[in-house]
Length: 169
Ligand code: AR6
Image (cartoon, rainbow, N blue to C red):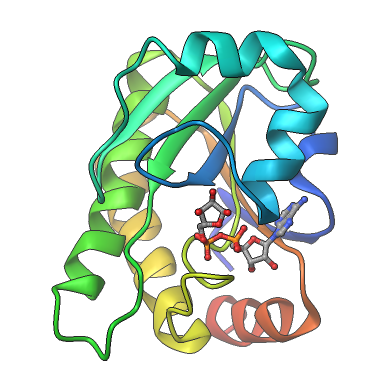
């Protein structure tokens, strides 16, 4: 496996890294899943500043401080809702990774952690989502020195197995 990529299983809100990525919705005003967990752990300061951001389009990313989180920054990105692959979902998911990484570079983040964007309530097929995530991160790291390291945080066993299989060969 590429030395600058790591896979861990667990709760992304616990990681003491430069930035964690949030799988948000376009309102940026919180929700369930990883988004809910991040807002709960960050405290009300995060929601307050998110209200000022004016939302975020699918495939884009916006950055805030981490407030009470151990992570310094939160990069909020909005993954596509899977709709049979007919609405440019793969390109939009690729864009989430590219735009999030670009924010991380801009804010000089050394270590960035990603959840498995869109693979929860947005129902993007997990295998395809992982292929896109790995490809985009690998390509980005080839041409950028920052971030130094990217962590894929897998919450469920299925994603963990998929990422291990993809990155260990
Ligand atoms: N740490 C890491 N990963 C997590 C955590 C956690 N604490 N909790 C869940 N996951 P989802 P989406 C995993 O549904 O599909 C929200 O309501 C989870 O197992 O959080 O992009 C937003 O507000 C799954 O693999 O995000 C949006 O409305 C992955 O995170 C909508 O859900 C993504 O699942 C976004 O849907």
